[in-house]
Image 1 (tube, helix red, strand yellow):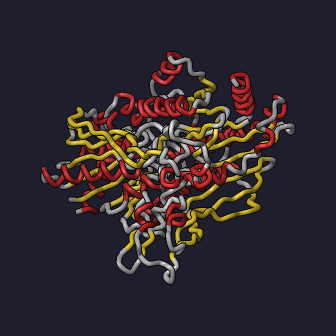
Image 2 (cartoon, chains in turn cyan, blue; image 1 turned 90 degrees about the vertical axis):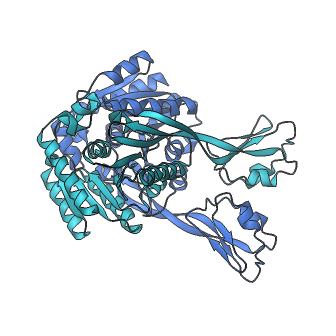
Image 3 (cartoon, chains in turn purple, red; image 1 turned 135 degrees about the vertical axis):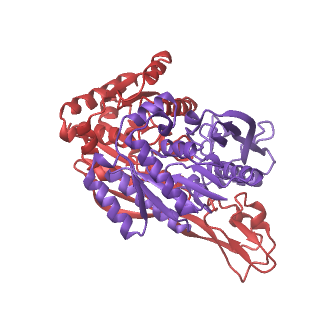
Length: 289
Length: 293
């Protein structure tokens, strides 16, 4: 069983479009969408949800106003400025709260209770391309890393149970907690970039994170003909960093057309772009095998 | 006035809008501009504004340090740590700095007073000038998971004294623009909370619409007024425009796909530097926001 994660650092470089196309091309696989903040893969794979689960993570405080004496001890110890006094009453700002429970521990009259926080949902679905595990983090919630881990664990369980060879994961942008949770322990990270200064800057950072966690990274340059000079710079950088550029994809509005139709581009047209993605998939297969 | 620029989906043009708005407004000598790049995982505004950095500071989280002479391995610190950042064995205390949020519970509850705290660097903050703009950004260190403490530190640099002013002239001439990270979770909230207005940037595709709806929910929850900028407005479908119309969300500006803009962007050149008509468009965008507020 091999796990391939598609990442990018910078958002909007084409991760999900490429993941969906690989999902359409690969055999014997399960898909996972680890961009739990703004999961888009389902818009191209059209899943039928088979199992819906609540996601609880972390704990949040609530104040019993009848017990609270407004002594201010909780406010004094909180390092996240999450406790305020409004019109003489102690109140908690849950947006700032990190859920450390120090306030509950120090409260002299036990007026603060910590309760489990419902912060999202995750799903096991069936698509015409195979099973998909996906999730939606609650609005303005924390703990996205834990939800990512849950998505990956369930994809792995499905792969084991059904003897599937591949797990194909659509990753989140950035290099922080959800990306690290997506990346750690994967067999291959495919980083999608574009030939812009931002694309190159962000690629360097995300590849370094992959290498930091011991995950082999390869690179795809999307829309490479927008700026050939920058594409050459990216290839140069990859060579120096000992990272293989496994493919380049032309800029073509057909990708947006396929997106609007809700289809993986390889199923929508037989253009150059389709051929380029097919070749990329062959290379990925060769690398993980 | 604090205006943040955000989007559910990445790569829709947040930084482009933030940078060009800053440059267009900075032409007005009356305006005192501050630019905060809060996308500390991938800070890109510097590539376009090319600021001269004048100072740099480390951002640290206080992580526990155990005094072996005082510790009796009672396990209280591990018990109070909800983040599982401490494990205590028979004769050893293990600290996992990557999990620590720096809440201080362990220090406070150690019965032997064996815990002190030392800073663990998670990133840096840099401050400088881009022409007349006061520029601040942060950068998360490679391998570090938590960006909100860096964002918090950047936001402490907002010049607060004017925001309490009741004089509209003062408010409108002291502008802090915040370039937020993509998504809808903690780093985004930390970046945009306390804004007077948020510009949501999106593109006319099913992905753009889906993530815009999520971003709108965030702003409703935070009770911040907002409007939409539609980038590459002619590439996909009309669903975003229909959604905005149906929900009475102001469509502040539409920017068509233009190869010249795309090529300039790829080289780190802002739109207003290659097409001066955009300067007026961004100033009008700002005036619309002032009217709404």
